[in-house]
Image (cartoon, rainbow, N blue to C red):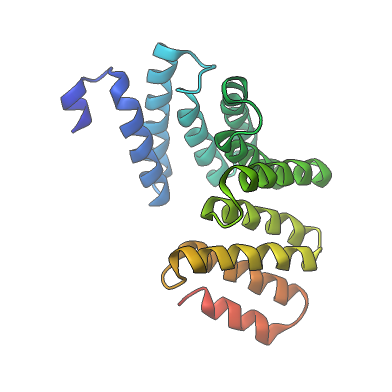
Length: 212
C-alpha cells in the first residue's frame, strides 16, 4: 500500500489518506474516516503549515465528517481554514473557493444561522461555479441542489422547483438518471416540495422515482 511504498511520514501519503477517508465516510464508518482525516491533516500541517492550499483538502474532509455527524461548529471551523488559504492563493472567483463557500453555506444553514447570510453565500458559490464551469456542469448542479434546500426551508417553492429542474436536467443530460445518486437526491427533494404543498400523489411519484 501507499505507506509501505512511501514510508509512514511521507507527504505522498496525504492524498491517498484523503481519498481513503472520503470513501470510508461514504460507507458510513465515521470513526475510521476521522482517523484517516486527522492523520492526513497532521502530515500536511507538519510540512505545509495550517494555512496552505495543500492542507486545505484535509481540512475539507474533516469538515465533511463533522458536518455528517452534526458537529457544525467544528465543521465550520475547518471549512473556514480551508477557505482562507484557498481564497488567498486563488482569489474569490475560483472553483475550489466556490465549493468551499457552498460547503460553508450548508453548514451555516444547518446551524440555524441567518438565512439571508446563508442565501448570499449559496448564490455567490452558484454564480462563481456557473461562470467558471458553465451552467451545464454537474458541479454546478450540485450547487443548485444546495440552493433548493435553502429555498424549501424558506417555503419559496417556485424558486426551489426552478433550481431542482435545472439540476435534474444537467444530471440527466450528462450521466442519465438510472442508478444515479445525484438525480435520486433531486427527486427526493422535489417530492419534499410536493409534500409541503399537500400534492401527495406527485410527492409519491417523485419519491418512487428516487428509488429507481
